[in-house]
Figure 1: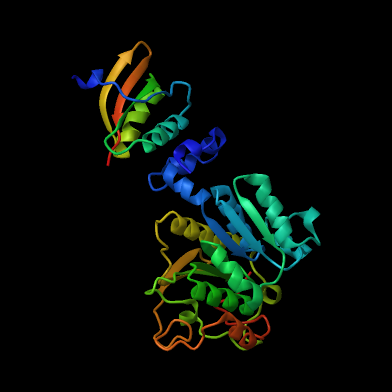
Figure 2: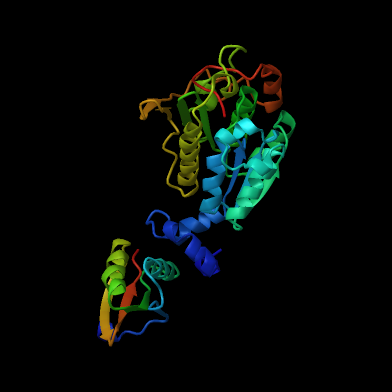
Length: 81
Length: 280
């Protein structure tokens, strides 16, 4: 199964948030997962997609897939240890 | 409390904490579930109270038996003109309620004594001492040690401030390793007598709050074995090592002090002490 086709139990639309709240909410969502569990985050182009993936990696999480759909991006993020 | 229990307002309020790798949602939850006792709602107490309330400490006890005076307003920033004559603990508690409803504040508008201190101290995760007299300092320090509660102690006079943490962890020095007994009366002036550059209390009190937050977040207390000395006239910070004293009457090999009630009788001195360690 290709990574970008994996479905996750949770999908969170963060397109309505304004940075830095986007990352705050993303971080709290990842907090809810057990290590190794994955979640799909939906981000806008621009500041969100530029900043949030890097910040998540800095926290130790893994971005396993990114799929662009129009003006939004679907990220498959796996919680780090 | 799990992350799902943060309200949208809390997520927005504590966003700058949650962003920090060392804090996150888990750290903020710890703060919301923590308790701190602030002894003295005066110069040192003001920044302590402000920053702990703002940080979201879940339960804040404020102990002060004094009333607000005009000369306090030179530096005691939780009080205002409309608080003159009011109990400081009550005035400070109102300040807290005005900035953070997450902080359940308890105003203890009475002097600390041997009778009430040993019951009060163990109800809290940490005690921050900003008192202005040696009897209270020793009472609090002894009670914290005997009850196993961490103490963050600050003191100021003129242009200088000092700060230390006392952790009852079995390895770090206690307060009496540093100052074994209250000094004789007349040796050291109080801020009332010698003066204090107002903003110095802001420096030391804020550092006390930071040290307490680090401790509550599980990041350690960096001043557990050191004394921090701040000299405002040159904006210098110096750290001095503090050692455990094997002869210490409180934590030494043969401790003679095992109860707070005993200490109060010995602490019947005027509110003065060594210049290195005064309150306010």
